[in-house]
Amino acid sequence: MGGIIAVILDDTAGRVLLEGFPPRFMDTTRPEIRYRKTVPIGEPLKLIDRAGKIRGRMAESWAGMYGPDETLLAKANALYMDLPNSPDASSLGSFGWKVCPDEQVQDTF
Image (tube, rainbow, N blue to C red):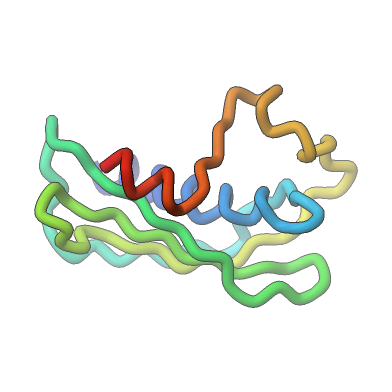
């Protein structure tokens, strides 16, 4: 189960970097996962991400996984590096991804 949580947090933390200007496709170079509580199965979870420092081809970001009672279950800090020859990320819809403004996200949970 820990591997699945790590993948979800890595993906969430990386996606926040796609919304930068310009959007960026990046590879994880240093993930740091902290498990705080048991993640329930079959319960709704909330994922939050935040972009951190961006320096040249490198960027940092954070993601948190919260349970139904808003308790932080796991978190990730990660360092990412630009992919060489990455595809154009300006059209996220072509990948089936949707990014909601913060006010819309709050209505979803």
